[in-house]
Length: 369
Image 1: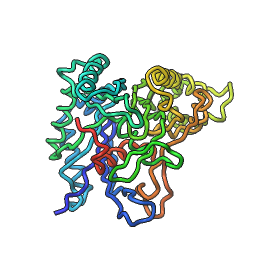
Image 2: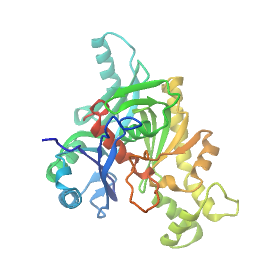
Image 3: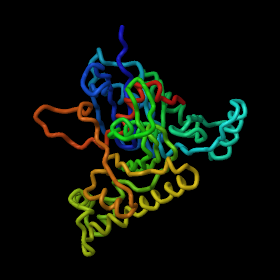
Image 4: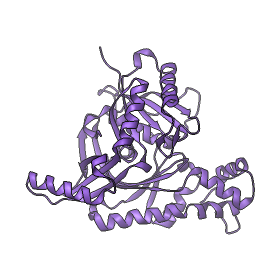
């Protein structure tokens, strides 16, 4: 019996997204483009997950099991899942290991990892992968073993076997690499999903509770940081500046346009001031890249993902401050879920779950913990 594709699951502090990607027949025009069989987006009870840590495992597991059984047809149910570990609990960087004999290289890599990972290696789960397009750069991802075991225990209670628990940055890098226009790229990686082309980018993932900044080359992650700026904080900044309630501040945020601001626009002023830590975070990450990565791995553009990427004029604001081209992630047209009779909606907030789905379909691109 054919086993359905693993679920892709993105568990945040406030929401959970569950999707299942299935490969399209290879004879279709455009090659092997996956299709999203279903997408589930549900709010979580406050307190179940706090800053990426699962605080109330039993009700969360019960909720996830019920949602899957209510929304997924029996023939599409899978016993497997690929999920992300919370970025704010992870550590991602790149180390340089000279090309040498295999045994010597392994020992040098082990020493380099121990030097850079700010975790007790005896109680951490570490994954290392060669950085695409290089011979001496190795990407390192580390997480406390207790965190990995907690998420594995959650899925066991749901009745699922995790075939991979990966960093959010890895999944986002896969999503951007797959969805990006691939013409003119020079570095590629072949996989069961076709050819993934690489182009160094800085992915900015703006969420409801935090922002992630990632330097990626194709599906490979060179480094990532978490920036303490969120959609909620932007709303709070407007509320404080204009002395209005949060609901009115949220409406003001949605109607603001950072590309058409004037010095006497208090909403735009509040937003720009609240976005300053993101500018500083981008500068810090680019400084790391200049110091530690080769010229070929310097980011050439910014790609916006996450719900906060819909802030009007954000691309213009970032381009002016960072001097990089800025684009917004969108699911490939044939992949995005659609409802007949309804207009297309922004899909940048689905980048993470899409990337997890790609990793579920493509064992070559999956890094297990």
